[in-house]
Length: 409
Image 1 (tube, rainbow, N blue to C red):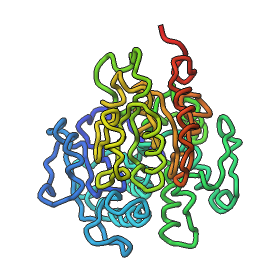
Image 2: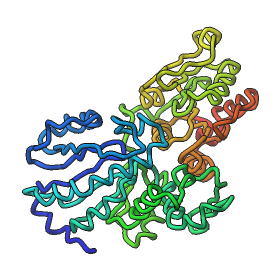
Image 3: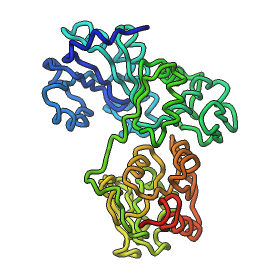
Image 4: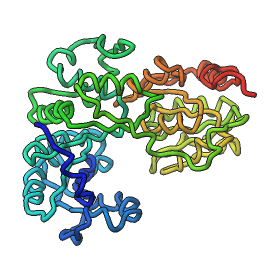
């Protein structure tokens, strides 16, 4: 379908609907009109408060009741409340908003002229087609991951049964062992209707009018170009990094304390990774910050044994502020995309320990393609040899390391 966006040029106050990711049934609309549903409760609406506070007159919300799904406990409206196994039922549940949103569009006095929606919500492509408006897919992840995932979803019946999957059509011709593929692809079961719907959502993304990524050319330019070629148009944009450190001197790290490290909390709370991390931290002799999930704790006696050279943060931590601090020389990360892109922008040496989800794909880009990080361990079951891990980290964080840009003046 072709869309005439020129007709919007003289209607700059026309709204654009933004449908947030799978964790929220709230719809933010760039609209000057009052919100008739402002009194309806949403557990996820507070996440939009910074946006709404910054643009109180031009961004309005439409709150819709979270649809029921038999696999979701009552009251669950967010993946963080149930874990990653809730991705599939939440995606399927949110698709039930198709008709309510369609009817809202048709009853709106000045309906939105485009939809921007998260890549987990590929069903909104069909909604936009029905409304005869363009849909732009937003990715909080990177273009390399999308290039890999597009191929897997379009060829799921054959590719996902292989022990090793190669991608000769992609730049750098990557290949991955089956267990290192993105989790949401790896767990796909075509015989399950909920999973079949997820695949339809993901393949619909490849038909979007445009795609927007939290990335930038210097990091993934060749994969942005690849996606433009695959889609047959240039409406593929890298708009990142979306979370920049403040202050003009954040990239000038000077001579950081090379023994300092900041730790990603994404998996560190689980028993085996926690034990592996604690073994190295305790035996390294270096100074560190270890961020753990709320409700988790290091091994008994750990904090007393390491004393003042280590600080354990349980729960949320200001990661960008920590990584941009001059004293932090290295960042041991499980290679989630947001953490990696923050580490790159802040200029911290990234020490990769991928475990699940998209982490192996992200690690390949930073370590193998760009040489901008060092892989120090792999897998959620791994307990690295503390001496070997210490050696790798010391080498990576030395002033002569190529990942740190060589000697500094």
